[in-house]
Image (cartoon, rainbow, N blue to C red; front, top):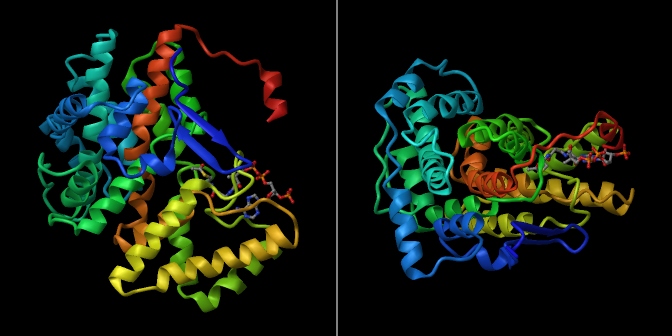
Length: 355
Ligand code: ACO
């Protein structure tokens, strides 16, 4: 029997992809984790070299896709652009109609490799610059930062980006993965399923929270303002972005790893402001909501990843798109699983009353 794509213990704060703990996976290359999710097992050296070469060979996007990026309204959130561009991209795929496993794998590789190039190109074009061609010598994370900035990231920045993609790659039947699976369950093509995932990830209660966390950090701007900010939010019965989770009733294990990475970046940059502001926000939320009110509202995956993006100087409107770059491997793993079942997902309306 194949290993389950994902396992979450929300009470103990455990997350595994294909039965391997996230704390072990975070030290691997993204390509290996992507392979694991899609194929069900970690690759051996030869399999990894082959899979990486295939991914790196599909990083360039068609000129027609670049043309459509240039035609986008360049003032919109990058997720609005991304869902349109990925949808458009499908017409250039020679294997679009090939529903065999190999045909779907070819599409999967083009999506995993093409989406970072689209996000970076959209960012550069919307800033009046030319897109940068991908560098096949670089890892998934390093190449993305290179295409975004036009200069090589530091070793630590490249490592953080790679880990961000790994920690964002999969999370069981979250809202966007469910959307992708539903589309795949109708035997619609992989591009359509990924566009469904993108549309759902965009919302602020899901992947869009990362962008809201970045806005919140900017608004709070220093550790001294954090306590008052949280108290006001609670008084107004507003949610604090980057906190709470439907499944985790303790620390999200990804949040712990993101916090460590944020601290490393802060110390290396010699600038603690975003890290310390985030820590004060966290301390006040834990005191007011967990200790005083007994609500399990801990930092989720979007909180410290938002802090990391501040240190990487990533513009907030790119935050959800960058989440999508990591998550696409998870969506694909679920779509492949769904295709193998050949069964439509068709819930009844009364089930909604239980949500
Ligand atoms: N800030 C303050 N209070 C909160 C928060 C928060 N972030 N999250 C939940 N609560 C409170 C609610 O007000 C509610 O209180 P009540 O029982 O007194 O009415 C209680 O906790 C339960 O909240 P629900 O919204 O019912 O919890 P649910 O499981 O439906 O929602 C969700 C989970 C959407 C993640 C929620 O915690 C939230 O909106 N968080 C902020 C947005 C966010 O960070 N989303 C990213 C989640 S991770 C991801 O999707 C990638």
